[in-house]
Structures are given as C-alpha cells and as structure tokens.
Length: 157
Image (cartoon, rainbow, N blue to C red; front, side, top):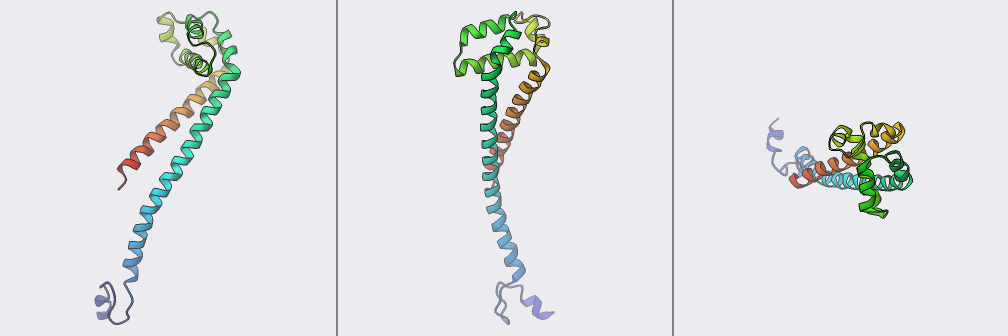
C-alpha cells in the first residue's frame, strides 16, 4: 500500500519503472490528436472524391438530357431565353440545366413572374425529375459536409 503511494511519481524509486497507467494515458492523448488529424484528411478525401463524382454525373446527365428537357419546356420563355443567352458550351449547358431545375423547384414563383406556363413542370417526366433532385441533393449534401469539415478543422486544437 505504501509502495503504491510512492509510485505515483514519474519513475518509481524501488522498481525503476515509470507509472504505466499515466504514461499510457499520455500516449493515448497524443495518438488521439494524431488520429483526429488523420480522420479529417480521410473525410476531406472522401468528400473530394464524392464531389468530383457528383460533378461528373451532373455533366453526363446534362449532356444526355438537356435537349430532351428543353423540348418538353418548349412553350416556356425562360427555357428559350436561357438557350439564346448561354448557347451550347459547357457552361451554357450547365446554366440551362440550372434553369430547368428552377422550373421543377419553384414552379409557382416562375409562373407568377411569367417565365413558364401554369403546368410546364408537369411536362418533365417523373423519373427525370427524381434524377435532377437526386443530383442537386447530392451536391448540396457534399457542400454542407465540406462546410462542417472546414469548421471542425479550423476549430481543432
């Protein structure tokens, strides 16, 4: 009993060994700090790959379906105006796709402002609507997770 009390010092006088539990706790603390940094890097890598995959899927979907979707919205002023302004380049196709997303996202506001007809959003096939929503939800989730990761990295000790 007496020996244990004296062994709370850094190195025990009798046995010559250090305090095993305290040293183990300190090494765990160092390892925890190292693991946090490593896991932040892993999360950054995962989110980076997910964002790039999302952008590739977005480009592929836009390339394959933009003309079909614009044909479905042929009576809408916003579709023809966006096509006239942005033309057919890489950025132009993406901007035209954003306008189609806005038609599916807020048809009431677009109708009140006179950009679309009353039932224009119903002309887009349901399976393509779900894909559009999925792509944008994936993109929003990636960006939100990146913002949270950035916050944790900046506030980490």
